[in-house]
Image (cartoon, rainbow, N blue to C red; front, side, top):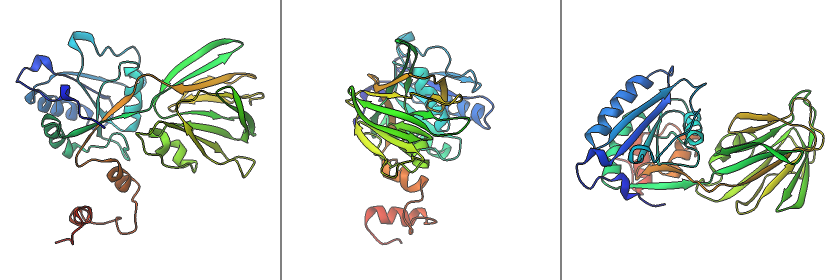
Amino acid sequence: MTSMSRLRPQQPAPQHLRAVIVGPTGLAGVDEEAQRLAALLGHRGYAVTCRLAPRDTWGQGTFHAAKDGGVDLVVVLGGDGSILRTARWMGYEQTPVLGVNLGTLGFLADFSRAEVEAALDEIAAGRFRLVEHLMFECEVERNGSVIERELGLNETSLLAGPPFSMIEILLHVDGELATTYRADGLIVSTPVGSTAHNLSAGGPIVRKDLDAFVFTPLNPHTLTNRTVIDSAARIYELVVPRPNPGSACMVDGRVITGLEPGDRIRIRRATPRFALIETQNHGYYRTLREKLAWGGGIRGASAGELHAADSGREPS
């Protein structure tokens, strides 16, 4: 985890600092929050562009970080779905992201509206961490040709689909057959995605700055088929010999293709890294503690009690 000096202005020269605010129109409060943040960023030396768009069109096209001198900061309004769409939109030109939660849970969009101004001050003072996260490439090969290629942040999912009978999924690791799953599907998750579909399916929470893939079968027929965590340095290939008519491959919640017999789904570590900004008061375990209500004594505790617990002293 490192700070990034380019985010910290050395002189009052707005043309040297560029920020983009993105978010879905139609979500309550997005327009007003975008205007407020544009003013806050402008006062801190950023030239600001707002790119608000409907959810069904957002992410289409290409994000050009190098255009007009480059982009230093992307502020995402919404929830974790907005973060995923932004990561896809940025593609191979990933830019540091500050997530502002206008949704419900918000593991990645971690800052509330009330916390954003203080977070921008922390960034300006250099009191922040730039945490890089694993991204992956997913290729679907059919009859010897790649028909789909996607860059993802959370997970690739193979789902059995209608008529909802189990399917077989062969897992190859660096060309070697590792196992055959008989299940309703399989989730191949990054650490960032470990708190999403993977967690709902009973998979583990994996610290999000690790380089690993998490393999979680959905309702496996064999009780010994349990979650496996393996290195992101390997290449993984999934084969479904006899998919159902409704079987599909999904990346970050989007269906990229239906599956046909013999399709090969290849997953490997991508070159770009998703970069998320954390400040001193917003660390990984605080996010888990607050979003998942970890610990019997934490649920319902006051801010003063939590601060006292963090500092090792009795609450006043």
